[in-house]
Image (cartoon, rainbow, N blue to C red; front, side, top):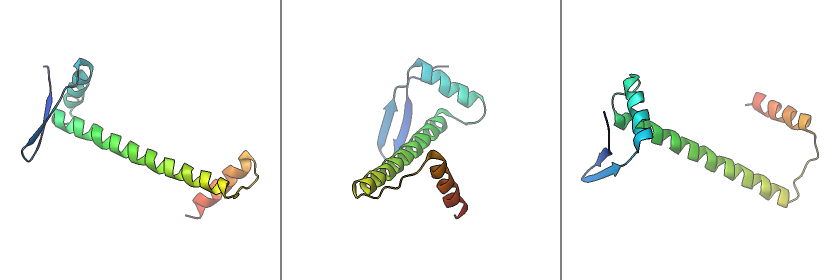
Length: 95
């Protein structure tokens, strides 16, 4: 069973996506496993996971920028690796 493209409908728009043999095989493996009912569900799940990953990456970049800005303002604390871990555990415990 080959799939040359996947069609997604959004009102009157149609999207045609070429996956290539390797990804086509993977999609059909996933459908065949019973975890998904069809190829569209596999693609939607993959896109959802990618969106989550990109949002997490965006949040991480924001947090890094906050740290860089803090350092630039002179908010620096001298510590050790063990000190960082201890403060992180204490912060986690207080949540």
